[in-house]
Amino acid sequence: MQARTWIGFATALSLFLCCAFVSPKDGEPTYAADIRPLIAEKCLSCHVEGGMAPFPLQSFEQVKKRARLVWTMALSLKMPVCNASSDAGEFCIGGPFTDEQLVLFQRWLAAGAPEGVATEPLPSPGKEWRLGAPDAVLRPVEAAPIEPEGRPFWRTFVLDLKPYKGKRIRAFDVRVESPQVLRQATLGFAPDGLAGANRGRAGFPTYGTLSHYTSRVFGSWAPGYPVWQFPRGASLPIAADGLAVQAFYLQRGRTEPGGFEVALYFSRDEGDREVKTVQTGSMDIQVSAGSTVELSYQHQFPGTVDLIAIVPEARFYCSDILVTAPGFRLLDTRKWEPYWVGVFRYREPIRLAAGSEVSARFTIENDIHASRNEVTVPRPVSGGYREAQEANYVNLVYCDAR
Ligand code: HEC
Image (tube, rainbow, N blue to C red; front, side):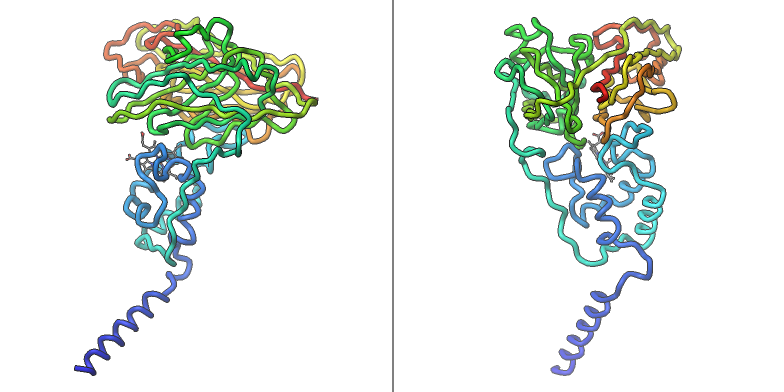
């Protein structure tokens, strides 16, 4: 009896020793060493508990359970969500998997998706503002809850900027009650009149085209994208009474709160360069039923500028946006998705020489197979600010070069 117990114990011990200390075969990738850092870099900005994505990818078990799906999504470039690039790099956090990383992931799958050494779940981000304590926090007076079902929609709120007139914004961030439903925000200064009392309260519909209402769109936000900061030594003077925030909502099958808050960070440097916006684009669009057209708009900068960011706006008929300067791709959408717009701000501003012409090309596919506008019978499409119409704008956010 005793002997058997001892043998059982010895077997258990040797099994434990064998398996606890067996290192993965030489060169075989493990979760701990190879996959976890990749997920942390590329997926965690959305796939966390309470984040915008439907499930977290924080622990080994969570990743292993979906390992094949993760691999397919990565291979098809669907995840991480990186909808556009430029010659200066990707706009999203982390960027798509490189070929080497895809091969690594595949070898990890082939090896049976081993953990390697035991790992702790990756930590959730804190609830604090990403840039620390803000100088001002603005909230809509009223933001209605988002119904479980229905078409995605845009709603613009005008927030009171009067107390901050004359200050200069160096950065802003947005925090939303539910990142599942509030998927993108475009920010601009509201022209006088847009902040009319009843409009300011619960917002009003804008169909994805804040550019139609203001020529001073200056930034954007989307869950899982980097926070908006102007380059060091550049800031945006507040010269309007209202901040217009166009929020894009997606229904997710249950009622979710629709509120948000905007944090502003002010610059105290008197010598800052002024951040400006120039807009190009149009609603003068006619596309006959069943055809595809390319529409181009240009802007020529008279002096040398530093381009900080691009905020494009287009709707359901647009399939692709390409913005170029001579010899340089400034913004190239892999596929324009009005439901998945990201944030297109350069890590370092792009210097454009005096006289540079920036050209924005929109591909408009007015074909029942290409359109995401749920039309079943081809019909002519016109430009306009209503939902079933198309509008094309790019806002170029820049400052003059010193
Ligand atoms: C910008 C936010 C964001 C990032 C970054 C992101 N995801 Fe997602 N992911 C989502 C959302 C949102 C969904 C739900 C799909 C939808 O709403 O259309 C999703 C869905 C998925 C799905 C399920 C797809 C399906 O068809 O069921 C997988 C798998 C996935 N993501 C893996 C990843 C991996 C792996 C990464 C990193 C390499 C990543 N995601 C990065 C937001 C993100």
